Amino acid sequence: MEKTGSKTKVKGYAALDARSDLVPFSFERRALGKKDIFIEILYCGVCHSDLHQVKNEWGGSMFPMVPGHEIIGKVTHIGASVKKFKVGDIAGVGCMVDSCRACSSCKEHEEQFCKEGCTWTYGSPDKISQGVTYGGYSTEIVVDEDFALHISKKLDPAATAPLLCAGITTYSPLKHWKAGPGKKVGIYGLGGLGHMALKFARSFGAHVVQFTTSENKIDDAKRLGAHEVILSTSKGQMDAHMESFDLILDTVSAPHDANILLSLLKRNGSLVTVGVPSDAFKVMAFSLIRNRRSFSGSLIGGIKETQEMLDYCAEKNITSDIELIDMKDINDAYKRLLKSDVKYRFVIDIASLKK
Ligand code: NAP
Ligand code: ZN
Ligand code: ZN
Image (cartoon, rainbow, N blue to C red; front, side):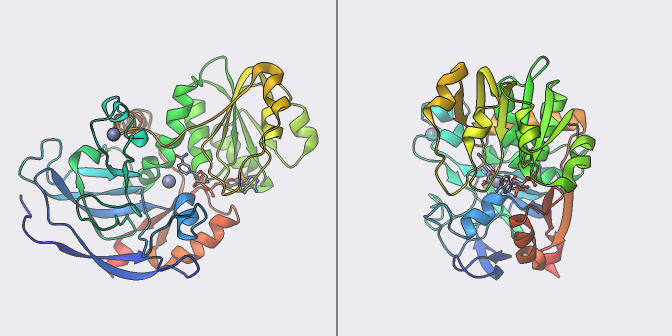
């Protein structure tokens, strides 16, 4: 089926500036190009990155901003040259919708590190429309098939949406740093990213230790797969694990002291941040030179690895633990996210936008 020639008017929610609540916002999606697929969005996850950007905490936010990069929907139309998708498929869209496709990063399937800068799903200059990209807090999206993901019909679509960012952002570094049997792996922060990291690290066979500042999450951490749980506000509990970790994945969104986490690493251990607090880390040289420690970071994952992760999740039946919300409740959800009060990912039921 083709849907060519005309733009589509869609409903969404947008931040109009960095201080106000999100409000209803209508805009147009581009006419379907030859390699585009048209997706009727069913669910969209709420990432803490949405909140950082809505509040312009990283600088450079462009308004109006329609956030959302954990998108799951149904393919309803396809362009004339589309090969990978057919009408009726369930498709996903994550953090990227385009890249140069020619640089070494793109050729090596790491489009997130595109030398020209990839096109982010929202808030990014759009080479195709010449405008700004708008994300998944909306009823429909048009995307090049190369940046869409296949979603197994075995997986619950609402609980699968968070895999498109929280899933790949934790899967990729855990694979890169070889979390697996014989490794003691710490996950710092039990939020959207943290709970996926915990599930993956456990599934890969590592000994997994979950850190949390929230006492009320300790039982959940065990249920989600942690072998041990550390209340990170307890100096005694932290001290008991000094110099013992091979890898700590830091998923925390707020400013915090990385030196404390580095002191928990054993010889040649790595601290890897995926969290992006707005303040700089202040790392002491002594935290690194002792035990020859490394402090690194990781940014989402390429399209190929995202598909690998989704297929892995379908095989192992791994999805996110979610709280399904209506679109109109997004501003309350953001307030709860700031208080670390979500178990463990908000997902917007996009049907609520159509009412
Ligand atoms: P989230 O659901 O809000 O989870 C963050 C968790 O951090 C909270 O649940 C809380 O866990 C812990 N935390 C919050 N404030 C803390 C503090 N002051 N000290 C210690 N722990 C604290 O957020 P998310 O969606 O998982 O995102 C986490 C971070 O990753 C954000 O900065 C986001 O922008 C970033 N991110 C990065 C990438 C990437 O590619 N690198 C991709 C997506 C998101 P406890 O209650 O267990 O303490
Ligand atoms: Zn995200
Ligand atoms: Zn590139």
